[in-house]
Image 1 (cartoon, one colour):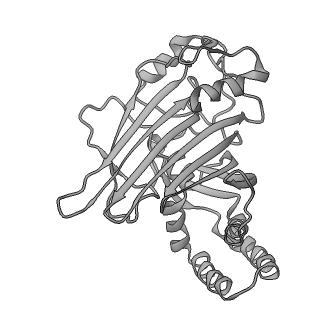
Image 2: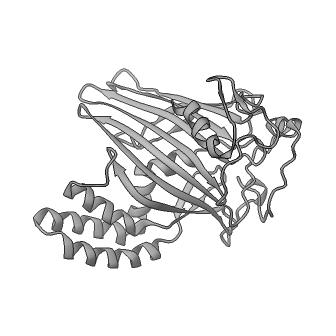
Amino acid sequence: MFDKDKSIFFDNLSKVEVNPETTTAIRALQNRNFKPQWPVGHKMDYGLRMEMYADEKIHEIKYELQVERLENTVENFTCFAIDRMGPVYINEIEPDLLADQLAYKVSTAFYPMNVVLDAQGTVLEIQNISDIKRRWQTVKTEINQTFEGPILDEYMHRMEKNIEDPFVLNLAFKDQDWFLNVFFLPIYRNYHIEDEPASALYFPILPFRNTGYSSSFVLNPHLNDLGMIEINVSGKMEADETENYAGNYSSRYLLHPHNKQIWMIKSMYTFESAMDQKYVKLDVFCLKDDGQELDFSFEHTAKKITSSGLAIANKRSEKKSFWKSIFG
């Protein structure tokens, strides 16, 4: 039976009343139970930007998505719904190549996607596979009416097999979906354990799953200049002398100082071998908090961004100025 005390998220929370005292947020950093407060039904809108370098080419993908806390499972595992909002942009335009259009159309069957988390906050499984299968039948019909050719037949046959097998579909998402791997990283942990062994983490840039980045998590003991909780995660591949590859990554997570929800992720991942060299830069940034514009002052923190000298003047300019200071 799942241990409720080990759940990574609080259970059955009502709306959180924010305490305006800075010391409250600082005490949260000293709390052994470093967990976010994310009530059931609360929604967060995010933007995702990913730059990928491979085969001496650079591609950029952008899209928006919404993350909503769901009721726990019968076994008391935490659940979230992820829904992609609006179009996907590839190199600043909507998919124009037939292959990109086909891939985008197929992906519409996957959302909304309900994910179940384990006690560490990483994705355990996709909960609503039956919904995905049902949507796939509609999407498949639309694709067959729009596209044609032998390559399409082969692609659709392979996709059909993957969707019909829950094990394969779960593994595909956990291995290949960048958002699931980065957003649901086990950052909510006990930062007061000394000499904790490094975690071996896998990310989709790696060509195989039997290895990973030896990773460390560092929690800033104080709120940063933006008045936010900051966690820095970094790792490198530990390859022996017989393995001719290397790689490393670094991620910066900024969390709301009171409820500890993720407001920003900025990360970069590299992999290099004798035959291959590639990198991925991935940024996730909060757009709306439960449908409301973001309050970057957090009701009490300084309104000047010291790292860039940009002042947050009012709600209309807050989002642009704030994210400009982060992403440049």
